[in-house]
Image (cartoon, rainbow, N blue to C red):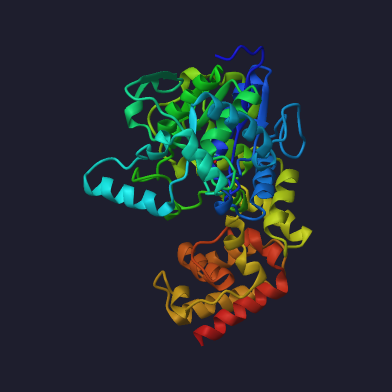
Length: 475
Ligand code: GLU
């Protein structure tokens, strides 16, 4: 490990879109390891792949991390001793280090045209060989190189990969990993526009920023030997690597994908998952505390986290478990806290309506966006078919009678619950049947919140008008 007194971790998102929920998990582990060891967590923006940049994505990534209640000690917005923290602002730094490799013969200029490279790959494929650069330019003489430079022929810079060497490293999750250099391509380190590739920038930056531990997705595992070689070329001590598992769809089929719901960190917040529930869910998605605890605040997680209990097996993104955790955290909230959250999801509701809804609905929602569908009837006359009123086998005449009598007694809007129950009893109506008719008349749906308890939020005028609409349907 790097001879640092302090643990320094980093998260290095590329601003190519929204932060993926898997990225947030990586960040959480980075954050926890740094904080547990009184170290620092660094945020760095890896924007060297200019073609894939999405405008505004960097700002959105920073914001969503903050919205989850996480923060960084050094980063593009707050600076730090090892900045800048955006790779395209560090281009001069990379130039200095690539020159060192060129001078040592550990990297070389490649003047091959795209056309030649494509043909080369096609031939290799046809011969059933793994496509890789054939080192054509590695063998150019100094004179040939100079001539090309004088003629301003565009070039990339590739790393020289030795043949027949074994690279071994110890991954914190996967243990000892071996690679043969014969399987490694002469990776482009600097593109023809002078901008580094991820592989070069990540090594230079992790070194200069004194990063001690790198958590990243397992898709980077095959890149690790290239990175380790670069550390070797520079004579630098590499950080410790932990290549995290991928998240799987709830049905276990493939990588977590939109097919089974949201995948972006922002989308979960928009749907009304609480940050603390999401974080708790992610904590256990690839790590366990070694006992059966399942609820963790961020501080508790920081204290409990270690790299020994990181999982090797890809976890299933169990959305039911997430719903369960969200329900748990929602119920930890006071009514005042819920008032503010309800207000955010029901902007058209008055404060009075929200006061009625909080106690009625807080036990019945999985996530805050459920409020929107559950309270639709408060803000509009939901369209429904007359047959829905008769779902329990009620005759149209009876249903009409039930609603007419209900309308009559609701001319007095006090003590509604008791007076409705008395009416049902007096008329000898079946309770389930009555409430189906009433519920559909008020809400336009059979799945609704406790309808009588919601009436004060609906108000007398609207209640009576909805009853009349239902009566008209039955006439
Ligand atoms: N920029 C890379 C990504 O967004 C980060 C990989 C790494 O952490 O080294 O996937």
